[in-house]
Length: 238
Length: 111
Length: 122
Image (tube, rainbow over all chains, first blue to last red):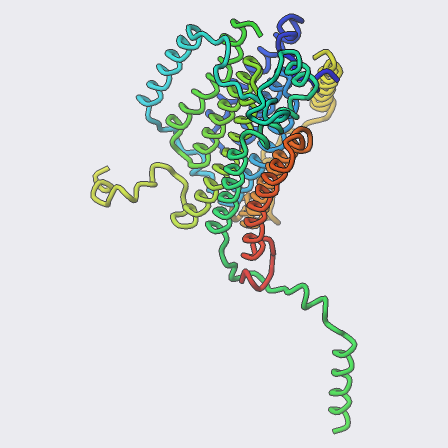
């Protein structure tokens, strides 16, 4: 499977291979735009969530075209599998009446117009700005092979080292070897999300029926039955 | 990736998505959940920019940051939805126009 | 990229098949439109409330937990493929990452967010 190698890159071959891939790219980006517009247009939040799922599907198709299969699958798994489901749960949880869902649109049109002007300006800036090389490339392989100080690397060894591992393996090296601080910050962020969600939304359920499953399962029913029989015998004798 | 393709197409797609999300936040001021959806859209666009630039510049840092942005989006959504639930319990509405308790009551009556 | 040609063909066939089946279902079935069919039927009465019944918060909390551990696995996969090359320091970072998440899990468990009907949540 050729996608296991970080080549510079699949996208290049995409551009060379021409019509099918390029048209797929245009198709997917147009679909992403249209479903994003439908997210904004639809009156019902449930429909908005479903159109957001459609946007994520198109974006994951774009990532497949870029040659990033791991991120395409991650987008499907995390955004659609977890985030959209969570949105649906909350929309269902809140029981918003239909009259409020169908409320009329009102918005801050000057702010939106300002954002549109920003779009045009940034588009012009995008087409004028030179993007050839990145000045911030992380030196990956010195860290792995010789430590940060052992910088004896001829060009060929770096190239073979870079080509012999997949993009995901390089991502692992960058995440666990170079940018450990980002990893730990991410774990703290997830911790905040977990604890915050529980502390904010968990309440005591007052009217729920009380079942202690362990107590129910651990009843020794032979003792209970014999106790009842003794008492009934005592009643019949008196 | 040719420079024209990178600038003109591959970066233009997430740019339009981002501005759509930002404009939706201001145009659809009805519901807190829809505003959260628009923020999700903006974060998705940021993710796409990171990944496209990572491929175009042949740099692994973009993918790393994309993974991080995904984590941040998850945490932000979890906490935002928790706040939605909490606000709905307190006020029984999610209308953004009605979240003006900190304005004070006099301006409330005036508007 | 050419190895995804089968996926494209698969998607196209699935789309065409779905559209054809829906179209055939709308064309072949007999339809008698009636206004009464569109109303909600609730044992002869008019409908009392909304059809959407509110969910429990527990679903949302379980979804949060799933999301967090989903992302944890997404962070673990690069370690298994390439992070092992970074040696014991990488393993220590991984264990620290897991420990921070276990703290949150223990908090959620101890708070009783995972129990559905336990006396602790009452």
